[in-house]
Length: 221
Image (cartoon, rainbow, N blue to C red; front, side):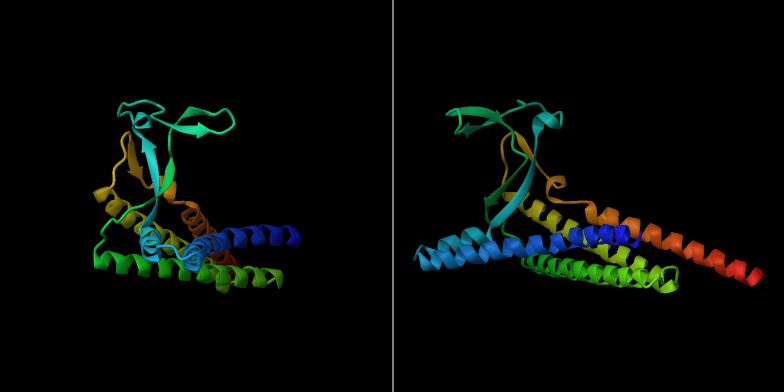
């Protein structure tokens, strides 16, 4: 049973670590493009501006929101057939200067660092929890506190991610619009961390109830 538990725990750690690595990957790609532009002696200032203003946006077609419009209002070129085929975009990356206020930039940076910190805190708590379980020291108040803090860390991470996405969406919406589409949050925001955080809190409360029942039973005896 421990082997099965360890495998499941490793899968959870992988999910948590993936979010951190994903952010690091995109940062590395941006830095790599900057270095390559210098090596090729391109207009580094123009490229730097494009990278700084790069935004990932999620789109929802008006035809899906009952606002009218064609189901496939765009088209893409199919290299296999050499023809254009009907298409509808769900997300894209655009380079656009959304002119965020200074305080919004500062808040977004702080929230991003808080999000990464919460991820790392959650991973550390989870590893400590697994070590305790492998030592057969499972039902104790330390693990209850760890589960509660783990849930809190994951929910904080989600809230930070949501806030940054909302600020970005608001600023982009002020200067960018695409015919037949509406900017929306759901495509750029994952609820995985929120679900994991709530599940962790639930398990923590189950542990707490079980421990209280055990303590009351011991006092009764």
